[in-house]
Every structure is written in C-alpha cells, then in structure tokens.
Image (cartoon, rainbow, N blue to C red; front, side):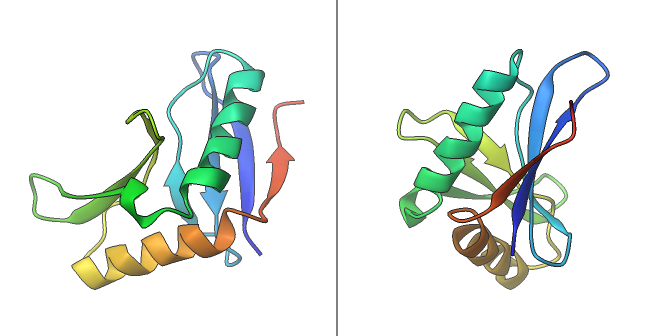
Length: 110
C-alpha cells in the first residue's frame, strides 16, 4: 500500500512524496511554506489522481518521459521521476492512480 511522506527541506519548506508499496517514490510535490498547505496538496493529489485528464504527459530535453499531476485550476501539484520509456511513464501514472486515494500519511517533520 502506498503512503505520502511529509518531510522538511533545508530551506524550511514542507514537501511530500507519494511512495508506492515497494517504497519507490512515484510523485514529488513542490515546496510549501506551511504544513497545512502541504496537507492540502496531499488531499488534492488524492482527488485529482483519479482523473486521467489531470496527468500532463511530458518529455524532458534529454528525451526521457515524465508526467506532472495538475489540480483543476491547472497548478502542478506533483511531478514524477524521469522514466526510460513511455510505457514506464504510463505504469507510473497507473501507480499514482492506484496508490494515492487510500495512501496513509507519514509525517516525518514532528
């Protein structure tokens, strides 16, 4: 089962990673100035990850596929790692869809 892990960056901002059941990070958030905003971001991922149209499939300058997950207002709420293939990116998207809705939250900042 997946989980959201909240951590604090060196600049004091909060961020979360969505990890799959195997511990691999499948989505990383932006930095948030407050833990409450970070928690709202997690709730947004849980909701928006169920809509395939919210996944923005991209290709990096080096040709590696990746994706961004966007909220209904178009703001990016999480991005993926770089993948070796389009099919691997699609597997990553499916993993977010499967893991996010019921993922526990592991707050490592307190």
